[in-house]
Length: 252
Image (cartoon, rainbow, N blue to C red; front, side, top):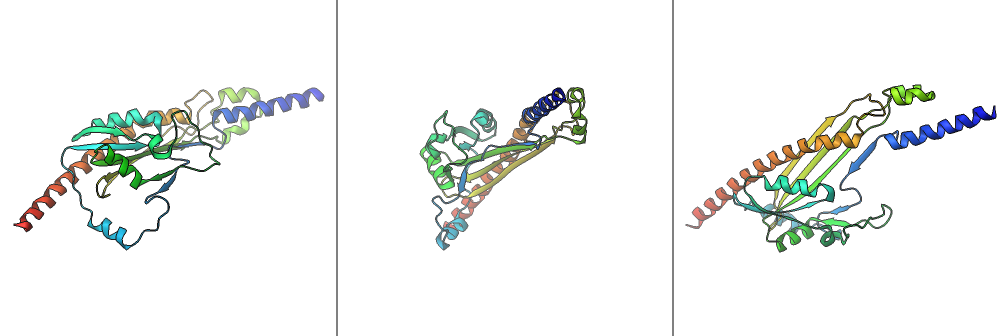
């Protein structure tokens, strides 16, 4: 009996560790912008009528050739985002706004999720973009969620099914978003967004993990965002040209 209890405890401990290593049993999630306090105006300042009036007065004012400053929450994906932007027609240069200037976070510094969270202000990002003489500010965010177990997990009361039964799920949903803002007047040129779903509801322990599925979805997300950015920049450049022509005609 003592041996049986010891074996049971060993199995339960092994199974629990296996769940944690595989998917966390309840699924996993990654969001690049987690742990960041987002404040559009900075310092929590209350928006007044003057701010609203400035927003209404703002107009598109970009040409068909723009310099882009971008901020991404995920350093690991920054190079991919920069390559994507460099491939957008009309983008003549890119500048990556570093975290050190935004929140004071150093390159290898890890922040506790329980402490004071860094604040992200669009106005501050616009100022940093202006210092780099950029025309457009792009704020990029992405994340994914997925994984977990299915009904076949009940078979894992025995050791062997853990390794051969498809008791796991790697169904994963991911997204990417890019907000495009005029550096000079804060005009919102638009949002480019993409979503992707993939994976299977039943996979074995040796199947792809949710983060592997998300990695495979990443190129598709970037391509979709790139196509939307191309369209939005082109449309707004035409709108800017038309507005300038109308203003010139009124002046005459």
